[in-house]
Image 1 (spheres, rainbow, N blue to C red):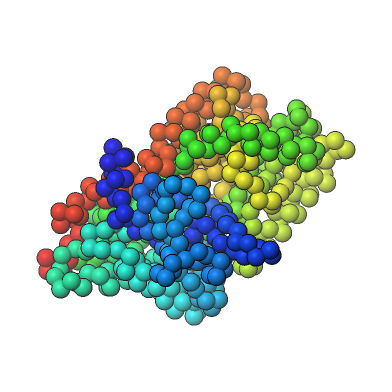
Image 2 (cartoon, rainbow, N blue to C red):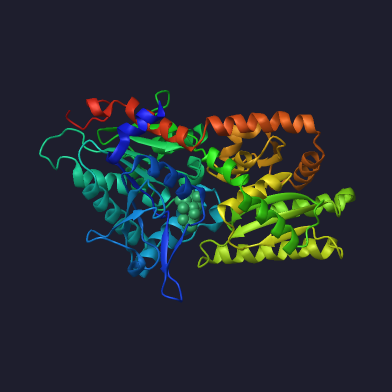
Amino acid sequence: DLDRVLATAGDDLVVASNRQPYRHDYGDDGDVTVDRPAGGLTAGLDAVMRRVSGTWIAWGDGDADATVVDEDDRVTVPPDGDDTYTLQRLWLDDAEVEGYYYGVSNRVLWPLCHAALGTVESCGDAWADYRRVNDQFAAELAAASEPGDLVWLHDYHLALAPQQVRERTDGASGDSTPNRTLAHTWHIPWPSWDSFRACPHREEILDGLLGNDVLLFHVPRYCENFLRCAERGLSGAEVDREAGTVTHRGRTTAVRAAPMGVPADRIREQAGSMEATGFCAAFRKNRGIDRDTRLAVGVDRLDYTKGIVERLEAFERLFAERPRWLGEVTFVQVGTESRSSIDAYRRYQERVEAAVERVNDRFATDDWQPVVYTTDMISNEGLAGLYREADLAVVSPIRDGMNLVAQEFVAAQDDDPGVLVLSDQAGAHDVLGEWTVSVRPHDTVWFADALDEALSMDERERRRRGNALADYVTDNDIESWVGTVLGTVAGLGHADGGVTTRAGD
Ligand code: G6P
């Protein structure tokens, strides 16, 4: 069971992600403020790390001086609870951040993996930064772990680090026994070979990831794509599709699907809190949304993969073609600024703003606004409250590894659940799709019809679907995900000298 699995991991778990769960900054008054970044990954992992302790290595974005650190540059978080783990920051200079984070990670790999090939930029010298920063992560991981420990890496920022950890650790003790166990969760889609073959340095990326004992994606589709890419992109790699393994340079990597979940109980609690109810009442009042007006809600980082512009087009069509919804429903879009020093992101923010303005100019009346758009920071309780208050959530990414907003919305519902309108291009659709109203983001006619269907759904059907969704999200929550990942690792039998073999063994 999970407790046993978590207990086994215990202090021996070393995690690495680019993004840190807490950011410390000096405020104007000299006080240190603690912020939590956008994105479900860090929030979910934080919940896990509080349970198991261990060490988390991440880029120390923020003020180095503002963190409360000991002589090893470690900071123990969270500051407000009994459960703690060690957060160890890696400080990068501006040029490194530009090349590694903005350059390769977000100008090349992010659009490439989301099959937005027209948005992929030239790699240039950024590759050297990417490789160097990955090696810095590898050095920290090697130092923070011991033989036998599990090292769990996350996402596309760290594709080279697994092989670099191997180079630093395996054989270091003079024998050839497998050393750390390496698992890596790739949270974004893995593209088809036809897209991936456009990737600069594609062999090195594949080789880096095959330093892992297990490579995890959220849904089987991405596993299949990866196996195909390894087969086509790396000469000498042996792919066993049935077993889901790749053997390369004498090491076998298992490729597995483990769909991530959300802290469902906590979200449900937050949604029912006084703060949540208070937030919703104030939100309606401040934004001029009548008490009886129905709410549809979208919550996203302002990213061109999220389909926000297409969503607004669908609402525009809904209001134009089905005027009975005019004055009846307001669409609330919460947007979080993201990666704004990249042109594609800045341009996207402008397109979102323009689309909001267009729809409002066309349909707003003195006492009703079709779209309310906000980029304000909203607390977790406020968001959960908004999810519960809404009649529907519209989650319509053009492509998305999983999408945790869809699951957070479900978790926040009470026994009078709202409807989830979900893009069939999101990983979340592979697990939730049968109980959602599905859309394809660019098919505006279908999309507008789907919004109409969701708004018109009778109570019985709404409850039937809502209950099924709630059961799934509760049974497959964040802890169950960790259990699956750790169980998969344990199943490899690495501790007994199992699946990981080195050449000549
Ligand atoms: C996605 C990625 C995460 C990332 C998050 C926020 O969910 O999979 O790795 O942390 O977006 O993006 P950011 O660039 O701000 O970390």
